[in-house]
Length: 432
Image (cartoon, rainbow, N blue to C red; front, side):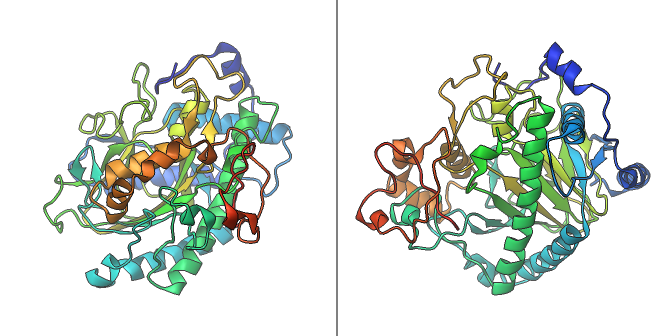
C-alpha cells in the first residue's frame, strides 16, 4: 500500500488502543470547550465544513522512552488517525517566541511592496511571495508569504556546488532574522520530541528511527498573511487563501491568530492520496467533508506530511488542508520539520508492505519538485532550469539512506579541493 487511506493493522491497533496512562491535559479540555463555543463564529463565510474539536496534548520537558512516553505516543497517533490533526499546548517560552514572531510578521507585511519584493534570492526559494504568485492546482493563491529556508552563506560548499534550492535567506531586517530563527529552533525541539514519541507509539525498538533522518534537517517555515476576503487583487478564486494540498515532509507545526481560516481533511476510508506519485493539489476542495480548525489560544496544531505517510505505509497519512479568507486579515505560521535534504526515506521496520517506490524517496527531489511546481515563474525556478540544476539531484553525492558522520565543511580544507563527498561516504552535513 502506498496511498493515503485508513490502514488496518490488527496487532498494531491493539497496541495503540491499549489503556493509556497519559490523559489529555486539563487545560486541553478547557480549550476544547472554547473551540466548541466560539469555533463556528470564526469560520470564514461561504465554507462548507464541520467545526473540529481537537485533542490537546502537552509535551514532557524530558523524554525517557518509558511507559508514559510510549502511552503519549500512542495517544497522539490515535488522534492523528482519527482527526488528521492535534493540538500541543504552548509552554511560556513558546508563547513568548510566538508573540514576538507575530509582531515581526505584521511589521514585515506592513512594509511597502517594493521593499518586500526586494527580498528574493535566485538560488533558494527563501524570501517574499506576493499574493497571487503561488499556484495550487494551477490556481493563484491569495496568501502573501515570506518563506524561511535553511540560510546558507555563499561560502557553503553546497551553495558553491549549485545544489538545487540551496542559498541564503534574504532577510528584510535583522530583528526578523533573530526572532524567526529563535522561533524555528524552539519548534524544532518540539518536532524532535514528537518524532521520538511517534517511534515509541508505533512500538518501534529504535526511538531514533525517525530522528536519524533529521540531522541537519531541511526545516523551513512559511510566514503567512491572508488578506480580508473582499480586499484581494482578483488573481485567484473568491474566498480561497490557499487551495487544498498536502505538505512534503514529516510534521507540520502551525500557529494562527484569532481570525480563523484553516480547514483540514481527516482520514476517510477508501480515499487515497500519494502526493509523491500524483499531485494532491486541489483534491476535493469544494465538497463538504472538511473540518474547520478554530483558533484556540496558547496551542499550536500538528499534522503529518508526505514523508511520514510514506515511511509508515499510510498508517499515519499526510493531512490535506486548505485556507479560506475571512472578514479580516489573518496571520499564521507553518513550520515544517523535515528530513535532511539528502536523505533517502525508507519504510520503518514493520511498515514495509511493498509500497512504491521500492528504492525509497529522496526528500530533496520531492521538496524541489513541489516548489518548482508551485512557483514556476520565480527567478529561482528559472535559474535552476537554465542551469539544469535538477540533474544534480540524481547524483549519488546528494543521497544517503543512513546518516553519515558530521564534519564542519567550513573548516575542512579538503572541501575546496573537490566534491563534498568521499567516494564511499554520503553527505557530510554542515554544522550550521
